[in-house]
Image (cartoon, rainbow, N blue to C red; front, side):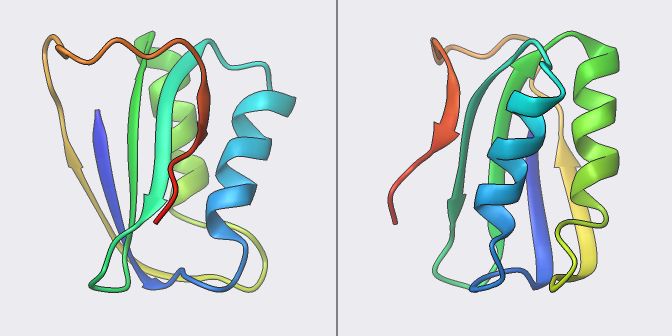
Length: 91
């Protein structure tokens, strides 16, 4: 699944909060989160459906300083990327 989160989502700890959420909730998800040049945040995640839904719900709110305006989702039936963990991807 690929999420694109728009709004006030950069420079508010959004990426770090996503990684922290996945790790503290012990979601069986692998992938990455990164800032995009257009000011949005991209999350690419692989995992079971319920965990991905949980992550999507979190991303609709984000951390307290974020102002999420829109979350678009693209579902990839089978990703060709082979992630081993979940973390930040540098800008």
